[in-house]
Length: 439
Image (cartoon, rainbow, N blue to C red; front, side, top):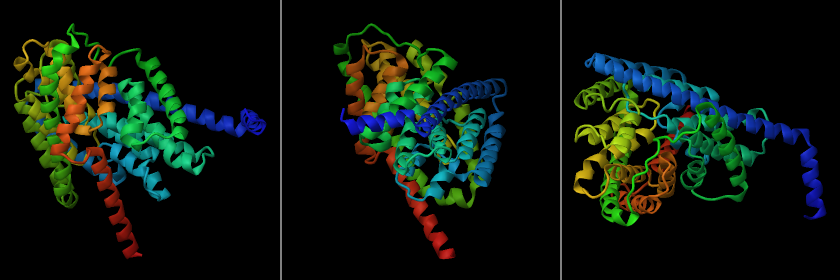
C-alpha cells in the first residue's frame, strides 16, 4: 500500500467523525431488520384475522373491504400521498430525481412508517397485497434519513444509501441475503458499481442478521426437497416457463395499462373508486372462498409442501384481486401475491406433467410467473432458491426464469417496475410544471 494511502487510512481509522458515520449506518441497518420483522409479524396476524372473519361471516368483506379501502385512501391522500403503491418504483425513481426536497418527502421516515401501518390495515381488510415491496420503501426511507444526522457525501446520500436500504429491506423481508444484493444490482440500479457494492453488502448483512436474531433461522416457504432429477424436468421447464411468463406478462400489462387509463378517474373520485375496488375485491374473495384475501402466503406454502392449490380458477382470481388492489391506489406490494398466484397455477398444471411431482411444478411455475411479472430473472431465481432452501433444482429454475422472461417480454415489452418508475417521474414533472405556472 502506498505511504500516502496508508496515512489516509490511518487518519480515517482514528477519526471520530468516520466512526460516527459508520455507527450510524450500522444502527440504521439494525433498525431495518427490526422494522421488517415487526411488519412481517403484523402482516401475518392481519392475514390470519381477515381469513378468520371471512370464514366466520362470509358476507362481512362486502362491508369491511370497501370501508377499509376508503379509510386507507383518505388517510393516504390527506397525510402521506407519497405512500401509495408498492414503493419499489418510488425508490427507483429517487435514484434519478435531483430535487432534494421532493426526495425527502418520498423517502421520509413518516412516509415509510405510515406505509407499513397501512399495509397491515389493508391486509386486514381483505386486500390482496404484499409487504415485501413496501418493506423496500420503508428500508430505503430509514437508510436515506441517516443523511440528516451524519455527514454523508452527496453521492453517498443520493445513490448508495438508497441502494443499500433497498437491498437490506428485501433481504430482511424474505430472509434472502444474496437476493437482496442481486436485487439492488439487477432491478434497482441495473448496473454494478464497485463503490456501491461494499455498503450494500454491509447493510444486507447487518439487517439480515438482525431479522434472523429476532425471527430465528428459517426459509420463507420452508424446505422444498423433492427427489427428482433435473433432466426429468425438461418438459416442466418448458410448460411452466411459458405459462408462467405468459400470465406474469399479462398481469404486468394489465397493471401498467390499467394504471395509466384509470389514473384520472381514481384521482378525480378517489373514495368512490376505492369503494368500487373494495366491492370488487370482496366479490372475488367470495368466489374464491377467501383464497384471494391477504398476501397469499399460506396458499403458496400449501401448494409447495402439499400440492394443494384450491379451486382451478384460484390463480386467475388471485391475479385479478392483486390487480384491483394495486389499481385502487392504496399502499401495497405485489411480490407475495405474485408468488401465491404462480404456485397455485403450478398445481393446476401438474396433472399435465404426471411424471413430475406437484411440488416441483408449483415451484417452477411460481418462479416463471414471478420472473414474468418483474422481468428480472436472476433476482427471481435467487429469491426462490433461497426462500425454498433447495439448490437441487438450480438449473431447472435458471432455465424457467429465462424462458418466462422471454415470453413475458412479448406480452409486456417494458419491465413493470421500470415502467411504473418512469410513470412516477412523469407525474413528478407535471407537478413541477403546475407549481411553476402557479408561481
